[in-house]
Image 1: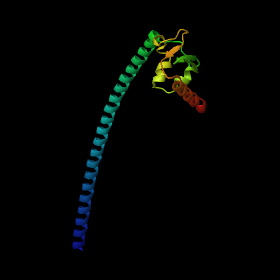
Image 2: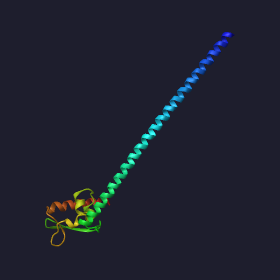
Image 3: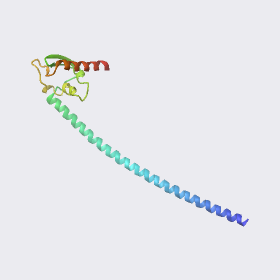
Image 4: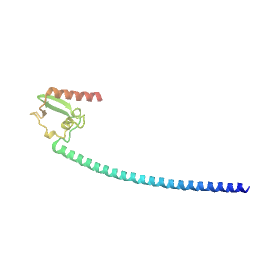
Length: 155
């Protein structure tokens, strides 16, 4: 019976030791996880601050570019240019008329820049005040026809 009590005591002591080790390991793991989470939160906060600063810088640059664009339009172009304007072009001796929106629908292209109205005061004109382009009129007409088809097909 004594041996049974000793075995029971040893078992209880071993169980208590394992539980203490387990609790210690849990506390240590929990502390490491909290530290890792805090570090991650700090790093994310730093990235957010960095991105906010970059966004602010980019927005300031965009505002500056828009201001310069408007100033350029005022100096070199037609500030009243509208998409519904009919633009008359003397292309190699042939008069071609098209809506400004048709000619400028492909953003970022030379056509868009040329016919947007931003450079109207700088464009060469014929004796009737039409935009003069020294180009092959057949090729230019084909481009305008293609742009017109794009306009019609997108409606």
